[in-house]
Length: 342
Image (cartoon, one colour):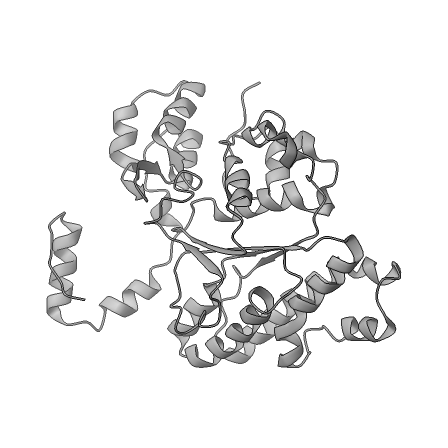
């Protein structure tokens, strides 16, 4: 049966259960697990499958999906029999900052505290399993949207301690779009306050956390180490120039052409002209998934990806810039080269 083409679905189990078009990227799970980095930050442009990848990792490891290995039938991860033995065996915390687009610092903090409280609600069942002391149960109850900042900053560290004790294995923490609050803070003028708060949260969660098994973060930008990650010397940063995981986000040309064959589409040269051009590490010919899925669905060429992005940050950088910067930008858009000194 032909797989349905749907856009905007970033939940792995829903894709697999409903026979929705999916290109197998589960080799990332093995590569990331074998790499053994304690905390990994991967940056990719918007609409390159970061959220779906994190949900795929969660579906593979999380105790929430125990005995769900059938969702991975026929995918490359099933070739690793040893890794499949721990499917659904590790407590996994999934966090997304994608909706945090606050107009001021107070609102940003409150939104983050709501997210942290919701995560605690998801694991509230451990309060009835008799592994926490009465004092720890009281501490657990302090996590709420109105909690003080110090409790919020350490909340994920404490939760990993509780989960590690309950299940006898150190948890995995997955953080999607870690940088969305920072972009909004820069655009809206509360950068310094946001950095101070998030640095404390990230440091206690990913650095000074003896109960953390693995951490995986994604975003579209790399916030400077000097500002946000000054204390995270255990952070493995994988950007678009890194060789690591180069073909795990986005579609390769072979994958795109195979998908076109599946749906009886021709005009591969035209697809290449419209959507080719990304290079990750030393891997050329990486296609944006959103564009390709849009084309497979509509059977016509259009700038699908351009219709989904926000250019506010670029606008703020270029808008007040000198005329020479604008002229250089125009040269780049026309395919010309410029020389600058850093």
